[in-house]
Image 1 (spheres, rainbow, N blue to C red):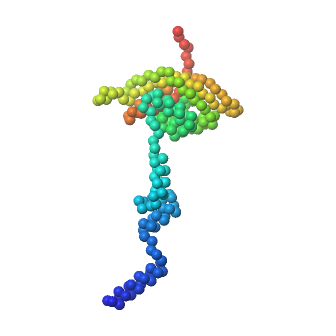
Image 2: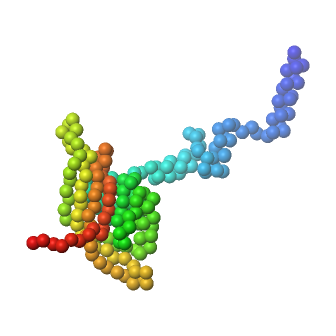
Image 3: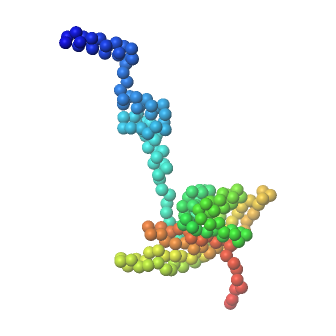
Length: 204
């Protein structure tokens, strides 16, 4: 019995000498995480590495402001057009929204609207919007007496500066007639953005 124990001790000692200092599972995970930042860190990882990953995740999860009124919706769209924030612009439109273009064609849905803005931004536009009239209608009254799901028509004028194909700067004004809708969560989104409504004969 003593002989077997002695042999086992010698075998373990030889194994440790051959392998070198053993590495604990925790130390091994930390080493992999340091060598490969894409690996998800555990709670035993170095603090500064974990902070970097957490900071990146928080930056990606910070939501953009949402519009609580039709006026806020127009303001946010103007700000995001100026910033050329494509994702922010798309977030202000319903999935099946439409934008009327200069030639009368219509960009439909998030994909079509994104493509339209990508093309338009090559002209470096600067847009100033002046809403003149907002009419809210429709919706349904809830148990608390509040009306939800309203639709609004927003009309006004705008000034637009942008580059021509020849590189010269162009500036013009126009009218718009937009349709926006209140969502179940109380925010507002574009249903239709029409910067080129038809002009009829004025009656006095």
